[in-house]
Amino acid sequence: MSDHTGYRKKGAMESIYNYLDVTPYWIQPAALERRFVLHSGEHELGQLEFHSAWGSLALAECAQGRWSFKRVGFLNPRVTVRLPDTESDLGLYTPRWTGSQGRLELANGHAYVWQAANFWASQFCWRHPSGDDLVLFSPGSEEQKLSNLFKQQARVTFASAAQNLGDLPLLVLLGWYLMILQYDDAAAAAAATAAAA
Image (cartoon, rainbow, N blue to C red):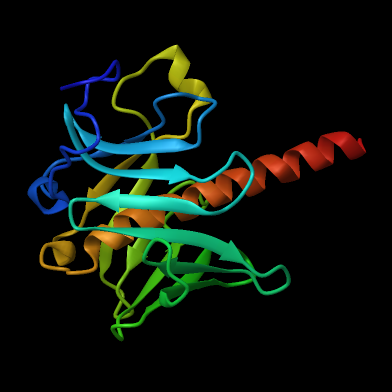
């Protein structure tokens, strides 16, 4: 069953691992909703939905699992990764002060680096601490439509090093969450600058 955007509705998610040789897209079905769907063609691979219009709590889901993400702290911000409705951290993402790089430490002992992949910090990627690229997020939409200009969307590209990575689904969902936070922060900064002018 498909909705107006062409991909299958929730409940029929496909495994992200089945789509590593194609380019899935994160799309925002409605510009005014903080809900995002990862899809490839008509196949839904994951979802990210914020709890409210202004908060940072979001629920992420794919065929491999469900997590909640939340930014906490003011002077020392970080993002917690938890199972939904629990209080124990499965992981903690800590950004560097520039915001264009950070590190994810997981309870299973694995660690990953998040950093800008180009000079303008419009593309981001997860890297293994050894330096191998894993997942690249680039702005763009599968279909060039005027309505997409007002939506937050991106294509996802997988490096060969990601093929057998057990944490890959989490990285795909958390990476998009971090990009949304960055978009929100940039919009807030622009609004504050405009108001002060």
